[in-house]
Amino acid sequence: MNKNVKRTVATMMIAGMTFSGAAGVYAGTNMQKISAFLNYSIGFKIDGSTYIPKDENGNKLAPITYHDTTYLPVRALSNALNTPIQYDSKTNTIYIGTSTTDQWVLTNYTAAQLDEIKKAFAGFDGFETAYAPQMMIKGDALQKVATTADGVNLLFKDMTVNVSPRDYSYEYDGTSVTLSNGAKAKWYTEGKTQMLTVKVDDRFVTVSSPSGKLSKSQLEKAVVSVTKVGAIQTDLVKVTYTAAQLDELKKAFANFDGFEAPYAPQMIVNGDALQKSAATADGVNLLFNNMTVNVSPRDYSSEYDGTSVTLSNGVKAKWYKPGDTQMLTVKVDDRYVTLSSPNGKLTQAQLEKVAVNVVKVGAVQTDLATVTYSAAQTKAIKDEFAKFDGFTAAYAPTKMVKDDAFQNVASGDSVNFLFKHMNVQISPRDYSVGYESTNVTLPNGVKAKWFTPSDTAMLTFQIDDRYVTISSADNSLTKAQIEQVATGVAKLK
Image 1 (spheres, rainbow, N blue to C red):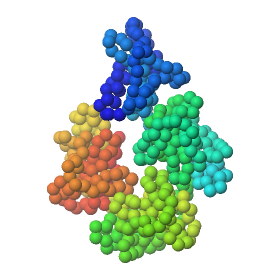
Image 2: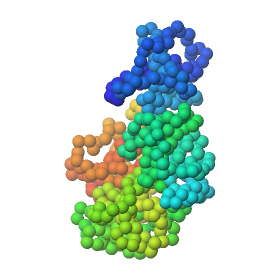
Image 3: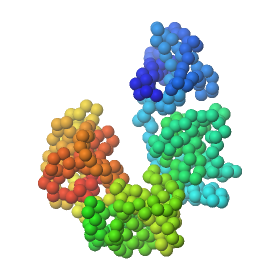
Image 4: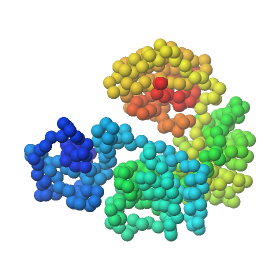
């Protein structure tokens, strides 16, 4: 739908809220009796298709005409436009679209739940790999996992997720949609329940909200997070590279012009350890006890048939087998990372979990120090942010290079933190617009970009509703150090 049309309709929805499902919001002196007409003569077309508004029980709804203005049934229309609507009883506020109550959290499955999920899938020959959502609406929770005749049901408090080799949607008429990850999906109605089906790897995932508490857009967001269940989190440990290992890593990458930035896993399977880093003709090999990680400008997988998979971070990867060893290749920034377990001790799920954690190696941890602000400095920072209408929450760097020091804070069209060796700007404006830039992924997984407006390279990334730009005016900090500092910008307590 045309954005302007959609915006106009949304305005009409707001105008009509008191006549729809939200009528019970107002009470006492906030209610005013009126005389209006149900107008059954008005028809609706959305994107050229006839639309009949209905309530949650399937009963036909009519718009209301009052003082020559037409008021539309907001709940039904929000479903038709795939725009979520929520009511917060604590504040008597109706939210159309994204709301402050729409909070997403990671589905941190317990070991017992993971075991139950894996057992449910294990009964299917050729379909044993377990899949489950990685995100859910805050307040929801997995209740039970049940095996069906040809799939597995994950029963949450407010949604049901079915994973099956069968496409249940093909028997029904429905509406095609494109999800946020680019995948094509289909909405259809079975009985009185809206269902969404999408193909994920070699299976079909169907999500619904039998309780009706989740909107279409919320279910679309949940289904995008359905991925293969990898190693239990306790199987993975953080890698702590020694100074000598980091030095060896950096030297191995330094031989490649335009490709010098070192990349390495941040998490490995418990019990594994880095043995050696070695430069090859067109890449770098990181040799662990139980796996090999190759980082190269070349995509080795392109020469082989393979199987596409979606990793837990939503990135597409490919499994293939050039010899006797299974290999997984994924693109990370401007390079290709290939993982394998030559001794066969790591499973595919474990290698996929490690692959998600291969990122640029930043400054050596011992190079960094914690920024400690005095009470006076904290007050000065908060005062500068308070000058911005609607932008009052204060953010500040919490990391700096060891020999750096905070000097001052000032504001203009941004809040500027002046350190001895770096400047940090926090602004509602993205300063990188209009400049050529290079995209990078920070060590914490946040997307950022480098640009050079003059002689000084600057790093910009978004945090919440603002943009952070970091630079080193005296050029004493490396890009890797600035990227590491960037991961420490957070809300000031």
